[in-house]
Image (tube, rainbow, N blue to C red; front, top):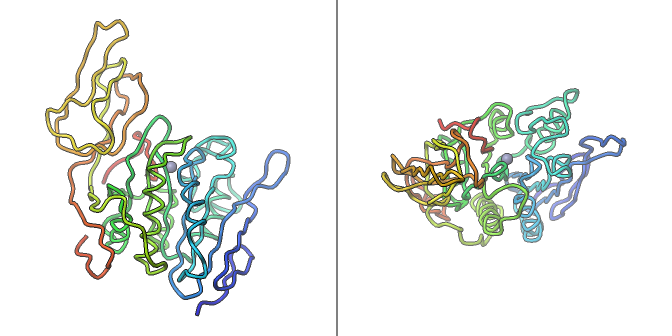
Length: 343
Ligand SMILES: [Zn+2]
């Protein structure tokens, strides 16, 4: 039998869901904004897991995933504690912006402080109320502006237990991604809380296929942690684990025609894109030099030289998404190509 828990000053009995909303910041009017979260306290003991979305305010897919999870998961059948936080960056979502009103990136503001910037204060609230005391986290993101990501789970793959969770998630790709200072994932790792960062789709929209991959993925992770029964089938039954990636950039400016899509396996010599000048005088085709998997792409039709066009990972290893953890063998945050490096 589980016991009552208290989150943000609200007590939640076993088998109960309570929605709590600690103060997060204020508008210019002085009206309070809150950090709304659902606390599901299971009837039986188990791990504590958090699911966060919209740390970047224009990344909306995770908000839909959280809503669907809350429709699905019954605290009377849950083992352990689940915190679901659909809108972490409330101010950014209201403004339709990745950032906070002071242009700060919330995912670079961790661990934050009670007396710092808007971003620092919200980060500190997330750290105190959500990350601290949790065993595992899942942070839902999309690609940044003008980009699209194939569904992928990013984590430090040297953590074999977390890698097992990432494979169970069942997205097409698992990507080894270094920790970026100031990110939610990095500050959680400092406190021994592994976080799976899900990246899928693009900003300012709902990508239904991506939302479905993520919904199934979260439920499959909860099942692997023995918190729920009967998880859905994985969206992809043998995720590819990738260890290295880079962005391929335009060599010439012009109108862009991409010849490959996110998710595609590319081979040396395969045409990747053509740039054409508006008058048609210049016509430049770019072919792949190496084998790889396209995990993200630009969605812009016009490009300058140096613009990041395709995010390509080197071939990795395929892993069946096993349901039984004992059978497991060995095994973007964000996505700004100016900032993102593989290990
Ligand atoms: Zn993001």
